[in-house]
Length: 122
Image (cartoon, rainbow, N blue to C red; front, side, top):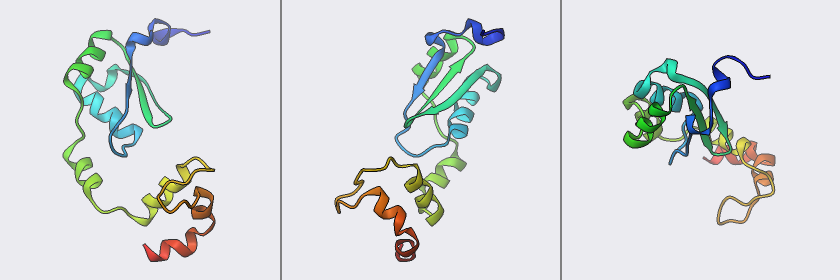
């Protein structure tokens, strides 16, 4: 049984955010919190490649939708920097299997199996 603040939430309280670049759930939550107040966020979670956030008031949802959100300068500078081997490995581990992500036709499983060899050339 649902109780407390969550009982009042509807789909109108939710926002689905699809970032055009890799952002963590926390980074998106901080950006939304700066816009409407961190206490307004009732729930946030990653669903596939998007982040779903529920806010306490529909008006605040509308505010975020109308004005958009921006990533902080610090996060932006980190995102603009060169990729690290660790970031590449994390992205590889998060990919669905049985897919060929690049033009070479090699599957995700291939890259996972030979990561120790391939990562030395990056």
